[in-house]
Image (cartoon, rainbow, N blue to C red; front, side):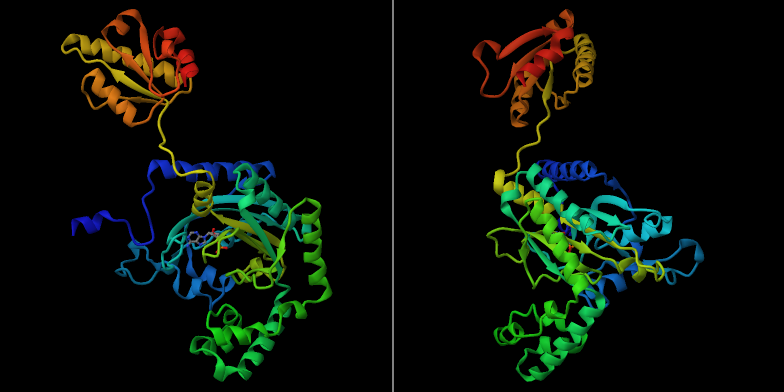
Length: 444
Ligand code: AMP
């Protein structure tokens, strides 16, 4: 029973420092790239009213029907014993929340808002490689612009980030045109009519989807259904001139920026709020189901869907999976490395009164090193100097700094190089406190 308690909840994981460091590198690089384009951070609650998600994400989508972590938020003071209150859900994505927050604050009405976020999202999916129930995304939203320049900017920003992270060559960009709601509705009807004619040949799941969600039939893996789906009416044939012109303009801007985008008519994205441009960055040469690293598109209808009035506020955005980006980096450039501090501070123990003096000197040394920007891990495990040096080598630090009786008396410290590639005469030197940080830096 106890061991069971030690394990995290299904689909969620403890992240050790070596991997956490990689995730933070991704997040930091993403934030830096987004800030370069003038995006600023917005933070929204992790818990939202369940009702907020139903319309924009699609009432019949898997996400809304069964993948949200939902519970009742009752007010403890109302004395109704846990009943009442309202249904709330852990956010499965952040675009809806960002749009809600901007509407609530009246931002985006006055002019274009560029926002980014990073944080945990929750979906009760079947966990597998690259798919977790708690995962992390960073993303950006441009709210208040219906200009194709905005779509192109978001994609360019992603391209720059992949370049910064040195994974540009490992990713493909796919793009599609979802048209407007009316065009999709017409296509849906035609699809339903078409599949109805073949109802007897479809697998049972697909047959049930004819009325509710005929688009999903296009994803079926059943051979006969796939055959039928191959000749189904295409959305592209329903698109009017305005819709075509818009996404063509996005494509032209991407081409001008030297960004190659593959046309993928099957790219529909899971969320209901999209229109016109949709795109996805996927891993090259990777047929796995979870090969998407980043996805986004335009969502001009979203603000109206969540109660922002009839006036459409044009907007677009993307979200990327931090774990998936980190996994890709690890595969392209080697796995996790130990996240060692710069310095392991070895503190001599002579016994008796001397130790107090040595410890005080160790604190002064640590202060000086930290003030110079070095990470200092002070030994707390006791033991003699050689035991402490052994621990330092296990931690993979590049240098150990030793403070003992002599060092305390001389107001100095001994620097010992712990790596492999130091010239023999500089493996161990003693430096006065004033020069210590500079000498340590040189060795690192
Ligand atoms: P979406 O919000 O579904 O468009 O997803 C955007 C990105 O988030 C995907 O391309 C993935 O990189 C990542 N992602 C989505 N769902 C999961 C999940 N369950 N586990 C890990 N990453 C995910």
